Amino acid sequence: MDAIEKDLLLKIADIHDVPEGAYNIRTNGKATARNSTANIEVLSKTDGKDGVEFYVKAGTKKESLHIPVVLSKAGLQEMVYNDFYIGEEADVVIVAGCGIHNCSGAKLESRHDGVHTFYVGKNAKVKYIEKHYGAGDGMGKNVMNPQTVVYLEEGAVMEMETTQIKGIDSTARLTTAKLKAGAEFIVKEKLYTHGEQTADTDFVVDMDGENCRADIVSRSVAADKSKQNFVSTMNGNAPCYGHTECDAIIMDEAQVKAAPCLSAAHVDAQLIHEAAIGKIAGEQLIKLMTLGLTEREAEEQIIKGFLH
Image (cartoon, helix red, strand yellow):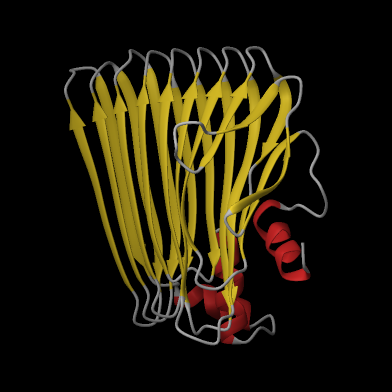
């Protein structure tokens, strides 16, 4: 890997060198490094689609899987399908992410579209961390459209942490989940847009099993002339608890829309939604500026704390 690709890996997956455990590193449309372990198997798909299948054995504990994607070739566009089969009682951490460096000197679009499908077995637990980052000369567009599909068996837990750091001109993020009895789905989304970037986030959660739970929290900052659209739909089809929250800071000439939607089909479905959009409070800026910060530096500190 060259210096640019190594820098992208560091930003999206905190990888300085070859990671420990199982991994699949994809660079410019091809798998460039791969490793399986005794408990996690990494295999190319055999259904004709471009992507990988990951198999985590039942009972696997304290193991990790790294699956970063790097695009440094300007104008490259790809569609990738990854499937994850998590065995019963397993407990694993999956670190994903995509970094694009588009330095074409021309208006070329670099694009990564991906579909990640998770089949999480009974009483298994998955922590999924995904970061998106873009860089380049600003001439071409960096586009990412991640789709995440989650199936949680009885008692399964999936925790997602998704972060869009900077430099993504356009993104459409779709997440769907189906929960069986006692399952739990937790999402923490952090999103920052600037310039004329656009970001669409869409969550659809079907709570089908008794005593299942879902908690979706999105924090975002929209600056300059960027546009964000947040939609979250929770369907309570059984005795369950669901909470969805969108909290956004709007700046400059940006636009933010939030549309939480709740649908109850059972008398014991407890569903809550919260949405708040507003600018940075003046007293917060003044307080930091009295400590010697400029207005821009104060804004940066507030945004950093908000998205932490």
